[in-house]
Amino acid sequence: MQFTVYWCAEVAAKFPELAVSIGTINNVSVKRENVEIRELRRALYLEVKAKHDVEKLKENPVVRAYRDFYWKLGIDPTKTRPSGEALLRRVLHGYELPTISTAVDAYNLASMKTIIPISGFDKNRLSPPFNVRFAEDNEPFTGIGTEKPTALKSNMLVLADTKRVLCIYPHRDADQTKITEKTKNILLVGYGAPGITEQQLEEAVGTALNYIRATCGGEIETIKVFKPISK
Image (cartoon, rainbow, N blue to C red; front, side, top):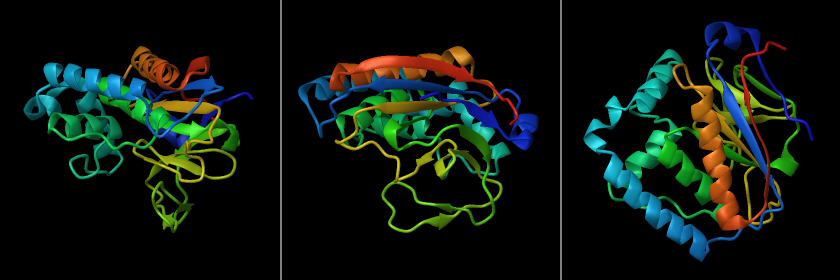
């Protein structure tokens, strides 16, 4: 299955620096929890607590880049935080990250470490190619953990495939394509922002794929960065 990302002309013109990184891993075995994820979680909590001060987090250049991007999208990042910052901030405040599954927990840990927002999808439930575009007014979106779809607004940036919106860029994923314990093949997306380099995106997704392989097995297939190309 070939994965291509297109940008609508409006997004490409408004955010020419934007990029996303896509990585895939196949033949995984997803569990609720195991020894490997517990050990990885413990080690990374210690690492980020030693590296970051929650009171100075807003000065971090990665945090700053996503916050500035959110303001440009009309989103208040102090109320709706980019997912990488939200995960890191939670741990720095002394709380555990939610236990969902070995695969989801693994890429959440990578997002926490790199502060790059990352989505994970069941690859077999996707219908590529993908589009980065603004939502249509009142376009339906069912996020993870919600029973009924919500109506999106036309200023919301989204990642979509040919069937549905997959993610409100870059902080809320769709329920229909989420990773479960039945998932065998995974696709990850690392979301960029102006000021975030292609190398940072590629390294974040690579870190997430390595964490998934360490906790779920599987074979890493590809990592590729996509920049704006109008369809």
